[in-house]
Length: 148
Image (cartoon, rainbow, N blue to C red; front, side, top):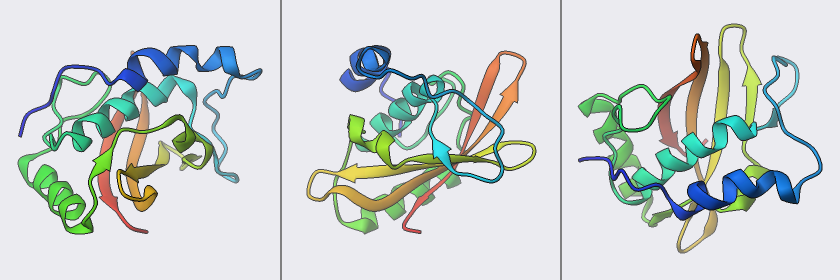
């Protein structure tokens, strides 16, 4: 399991251009009462993670900036869950941001990214992660991929 260094078309072209299509910027806030749309500043990194998973590359390592490496065991667990789901995971479409959310948990943000498959479109699978503030911006810890 290795990570493909190529950035997805969506991440390379659509994420930077999203602001042209929207009149407001979705920024990072510390709101522990309400689920909010995933901020633009995090979207490219989540695109890169899902791009890797959709190409069956589960061992995320330092090749994706802002993301803590997965252990071999964590990568195998995510791989087995996605494979047992029975559908081929695909890159995130722009519609994924309409339903993906985050919530402030006191010392980090809990993030849920809705995943898409080739056969279903929006699937029941989600990517769960934690985002922490760091001196250089943010750090993402991938928790798991599962059906809630």
